[in-house]
Amino acid sequence: MRILLYVFITFLVFGSCKKGKEEPQKELQPKVIWKPYDETKDLESTKKLEQARMHLKLVNSKILDKNDIWKPLASELEDFSAEDYNRLKKFILEKDIPTIQQSVKKGELSYEELVKFYIYRIRKYESDNSLSLNAVISLNPKVVKQARVLDKVDKNTIKINSVFGMPIMLKDNIGTKDMLTTAGAIALQNNKTDNAFITQRLLDENALILGKANLSEWAYFLCIGCPVGYSAIGGQTLNPYGRMIFESGGSSSGSGAVVAANFCTAAVGTETSGSILSPSSQNSVVGLKPTIGLLSRSGIVPISSTLDTPGPMTKSVVDNAILLNALVGKDPNDTTSVSSETDFLIAAKDSIVKGKRFGVIKSFLQDSLYAIAIDQIKTAGGEVIEVEPEQISLPGFLSILNIDMKNDLPKYIKTYASDNININTIEDVIAFNLRDTLIRIPYGQGIFEGIVKDSTTKEGLEKIKEDLKITARKYFDSQIDEHGLDVVLSINNYHAGYAAVAKYPALTVPMGYTEKGEPKGLTIIGKSFSEAKLLQLGFWYESISKKRKMPIMYN
Image (cartoon, helix red, strand yellow):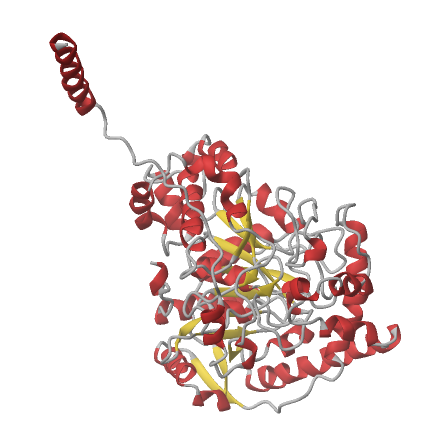
C-alpha cells in the first residue's frame, strides 16, 4: 500500500513539474448560447417614446434562432480566446482600411485573425440580450477558410488602399452564393442565389464577404408607419447609440449598425430614397448614395429599377472611397450601368477647398449641430452661401415605387431567385403573409396592398418619372447654378426624396450628437456623377470636424 502511495505521489509531483515547463495554455472557450427572454419590459419602455414608429411589438425574430448565425463557425473559434480578442482590439476597432492593412503587412494581424475577431465580437454582443443589436442575419460559413487562403499571399504585393482581405457585410437583399438572400422576408427565407454583380466585384478584388446584415423588410416597402429596421427574419435592428431609444434608420439599418458597432470593416447598403443616408446618419457612419448607374443593381431584390442603387457604408470617407473603387464596374445586365475610370480615393484626398462654394439651407441653421458644422467650414476656408430653395411637392412619387415594384419583383424572381421560391407577384406575397399574420406581418402590409391598388398606367408612370426628375433637378439646380455652388448641404436624409428622383448623389458624414446622444449627419448633395467632389469635400469636412465617436457600450 505504501509503495502504491509513493508511486502515486511521485507521479503527481513529476507530472506537475512537467506541466509547469510547458507553454501556458489558452483558456478553453465557454459555450456561447443565446437564449430568448421575456421582452415585455423592453417593449413597454418603447411605448413611452414620443415617436409612435418606435413603439415596438417585438425585439427578436420569432423564426431565427440567433445561435444558428454563428453555429457554422463555432469550430473555427475554438482556438480563439478572449485573450486573443483583447490583444487584437487596438489593431481593429475604429481603424480604417489602410491602417488595418498596414498592421497585416507588419505581421501584427492576419486576415484570419481579423475575421475571427469580428465573428467573436458579433457572437459576444448578439448573444447578450442587454446589448444585442439584431444587426446580423447570417455569417458566411466559408469566410475563415477564405481568409486563410489570402494569408498565403505575399504581403508585399498587397495594396493598403484596397479591400483585399477586408471583411465586408452586405445588406440581406444583395445576392450571395454562400448565404441565403431574404430581404428580411419569410417568403424569401430559403432563397439561394448566385452572387450579385457587386458581390462578384468585391470577390474579384479579394474582399471577404463576412455575412448579411439585417434590414427593414422588403427595404421598408411593406408596412405603413412600422418601425424602421424590422424584419420577420432578423427581428428589430437596434441603434448602438441608444438601444430601443433612437431609431436605427432604414432600410439599410443593419448595415449602419454593424459598421457603427465595429462588427465588420465596412458594409454595403441599398437606397431607393433615404435608405443609405438615414441609417448612416442615425448610426454615425459615412454613407454614399451614388448616382443611379454608377453601381450595378443586378442580383439585388428590388423596389424600383428607376431609383434603386447600392452604396458603401463605412466609418470614414477614406474607406468609403476604397469600397466604392471596388464596387464600380459596367454591368451588361443593368441598362443604367456605366463604366467609371475615376479613382475615388485619389479624388477624396485631393481636399483643397479653396474656392469651393457650399450652399447652406438657411432654415436649417436653427439646428445647432448644422450651425456648428457651417461655422467650421467657414473658419477652415470654405465659402458659404445661404440659400432658401422654394419647398416643392413630389406628386406621384409613391406611384414610381408601386409600379416599379409590381413589375420588378417578378423579374427578379424569374432571373435571380432559386427554384424553391413559390411566390411570383406582389399578390402572391400578400396571400403568403396572410396565412400567419402574427409571425409574418405583425405590423401589417399596407404598402403592399397599396401596390396592388395603384392603377397608374405605363404612360402615366413615364410622365411622373420625367416630371419629378425635372422638378427635383430644378430644386437643386436653381440654387447651384444661380450662386455657382459646388454642393448643397443638408442634414441626414432630409432631401433624400429630391436627390432620389433627380438621380443626384449624396454623401452623409458624421456631424455630431444631440444633447440626448443621438447621431446626426451632414449630407452633401451634388449633380449627377459628382461623387468624386462629394468625397473630396466630405474628406475635408471629416478632417476638420472629427465628429465620429464609437458607441460607448461597444468599445
